[in-house]
Length: 488
Image (cartoon, rainbow, N blue to C red):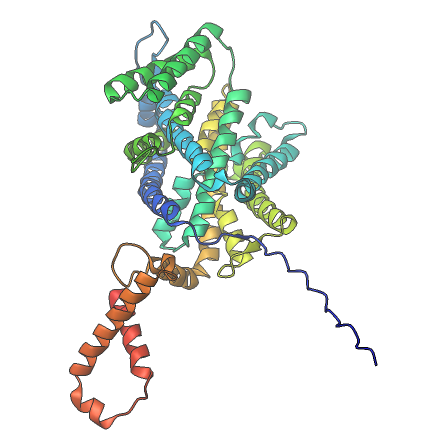
């Protein structure tokens, strides 16, 4: 009988591996994030304090508050810098904030989450949805008679410092992946806000001043690229560029963003830090600890009364702002994230749940610094309406902060366990163990440490070893766990 040919089973097609998002960050990115968020958290607490002081001052001593706010300082010639203290805070100090935002954005594109188009898709789409939906909701509320459609951009911004300040005050832990997502979201959000301010809230353009400002920015870029150093050169040049941009009619904060984007944020040769990272490290504490809190002190002082709070929910403009922050931001960020993950077949980190993503989306509804700025820009001829818009920003941000606090507290124990796992360093080398699990050298060090701990433990209890027989493997496990706990 002829032999039958062998039957070949069809080779199964391998299932494509789904990309994971909100996973563990690379170690350099995690170290940068920890340093940046540490400063922003302290700044967020100062921001909260400044906002409370402003509210108390404006409601208890309103005349004194307005007197300080409207006090004029500066020369009137040649560039009309005789500005009120409130304007100096809005146009001047916030330029430092946007300068840091520009560096953050440049670094994200060069070395952060935005350098990879696939990884960048998630926070970018989430940020865009978190801007579009609040603007749409505000416009729907204000499209009819008596509405104020010019304020559509007020509820579109996320304040990362305020959000981190809330986390610091309520004591909620948050894994580094969620914090990184929130920071990246806020960076993209700031970029969109900058574009909105430059395009929609600039008026009366003076092209001679704008041309000189552009020339000054080119000089700033040229000197930086040539490796010229010295704050005594760059700080005066930056001030001149800012003054020219302010004179041109384009909002002065655009100059800060432009100079931040011009800094080199990639390392060359044996550099430990790029010039952009070094400058950001120096300027960020000034921004978070001084510039933003002082701006909040001059911008958040609005009258709070029963009638004022009632108007927040009964008038179209302030109600549209509250609705945009509370509903638009939360649903926009979460919906954009969920849809992106669904259509790109990305997989959520198994240690997290979609409820965690929704809690962070609610936290992103805290709009403070940029929202207060746009409130003044959107209603320049109606100070009373601008104050009601600011009150709506405070109310909406407060609702989001309280709601996010409740949602995050429900999972705080789980977050604490994740943070402890991320930070555990058994061998004390300064590198978390989760980044060394596959390193043979780390495995040898921890095994030697466990044996050493086990030997010490056995020597201290010789009599128990003679009377008990716990088995061949149990002592090693117990001693290893004790070493982990003691090291932690």
